[in-house]
Image: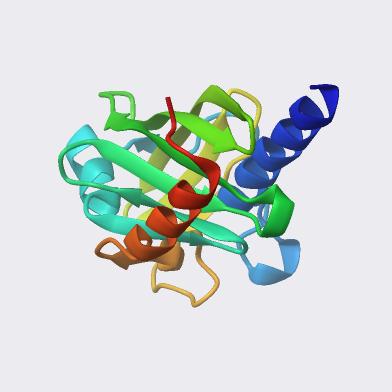
Length: 171
């Protein structure tokens, strides 16, 4: 059982690391001061960025359905996991994901939130509560912007069903 808890912790950490990266000083973005940059992004604007899009990570992806349903998969081999849950945006510019992640013989609920701020057309993001601000969307956009990893439509359905059949239902 401890083996599975350690593996689950590793997968959740990988998800968090894949989902948010800190700014690189050579990317021109640099680190933002620890105080909140710019102004809070509106709930409608944040929702529009994610709705009906797949966030592609290095080793997985998560889909934000228009209905508020969230599905995702991550990892390969024995480290494969998938998630089902909900996503929402609040009036403070936060995107939150409440999902149950399923691995072999274990499932664990997890809530992850990301804060969003804007300065004109430049967007900033950080993982709540302890992440650092980084440029999420540049103006003009750059190929390595995190926002560029959001692709229109559900790009995970087939892979998700295959993983779900292998690991069992997420109950």
